[in-house]
Image 1 (cartoon, rainbow, N blue to C red):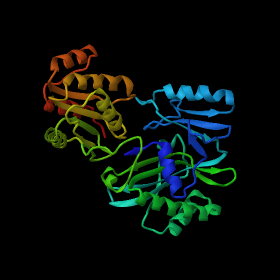
Image 2: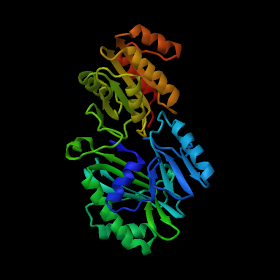
Image 3: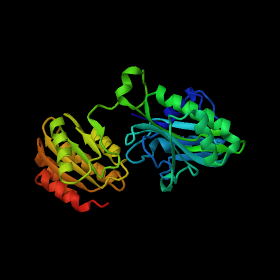
Image 4: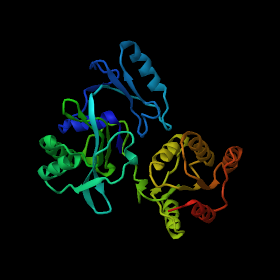
Length: 350
């Protein structure tokens, strides 16, 4: 389950991790000008998409709020806007703690350069989180070349580890971790993912609800995503992809009664895999209608930038209507799963 920024920052603050002064638009809490308005959508790239606005005067405030509430970003329109103090920034850093499934451990990841271009960075530094906060904080201070912030970083790492375990998180990413001009370390932005399986231990009231067990990440570096309906067909699709020499990123059973909205949400979740190069869609429609699947495919191609090639096998309820919808958009339905897999292999590169 992915938290929105304002939710993640509330969780951080509960663990004594410094965050900017802020409030959700509509709360009685006042945020002094100048301030920053942030669209609360469950996707990255908000800044480049116009979803973050700096407000310098009162006359800019309401127009800015109105603009963000109607701005769609990668298929998402916000229900919530966060207003925060405008920080005076000396330096932007990167810091995260995550479950590293490859090594079956929890790791601290850092980079000297944080902010909107962080994905272009190379040579991230990592440490095993089993080390003490004192040791990790010292090493982090040396890496960041911020020896004067050693004690602050030691406290930050201790609180971050506590927050991670207490909340059953699988990822807490602070980007940027801001060093202000008055030498304070503050979480400028935060992405946080909680383990759905641990929901029974918590009274979570976040905007996103714990995901059903029908979406499972198999390999976050996988080159092929799979979408199917019914657990048996979904498992068979993943197995067939493996046998064809592809690397499945996920298992997804859309279940019965899936519609255009829920399927589009699945597409948006799938395209977050960074190495994704193909999507296999294998649907035998029953309760889930083929025309709803077709509508979701068309919407995904129109709304999601750089959507990987789709290889579609579709049959069952309302197939004729689905075929008409896809043909009109020049989208091909393939005769069987084998042909989808063979075609997908042609677009995969190392």
